Length: 187
Image (tube, rainbow, N blue to C red; front, side, top):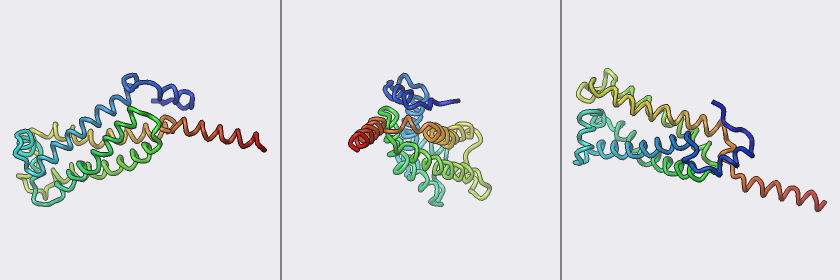
């Protein structure tokens, strides 16, 4: 897949609504879903009496009840660090031209890869007590959700890093080039 690379094309793309940019819309929908899923897992990890949280922790991911504190820390990192990033990223996708997006996407991709690989591996490891492992019937759902949390940040990082002009502040760049032209004329 090739992204536009010309600054003129980037400006045209930045002026389009997110509804006319299907890849960005897909990323925004993913980020909303990931934030909601992070909220559900945070509730489940801290044993909320909410029925949906109880169903999730009992039927899908009992690893969150493991007395080892790692699963709870993992879920809280998603809730306290990743969800604010998701909100900022949605803002940056709706209103393009945010130069910080490629850098944060790269950091998020690395953190999510490390966290998800460790979380998935720990939840099925032979040293995890059997009662805390993911049930076989729930593995397709849990693996799908966790692999999405692993793969989509990598795709976002690739897109944001490979095509940084879309995230450049074109107005700032045009002002600085105009200032440079004015300074040349004054000499």
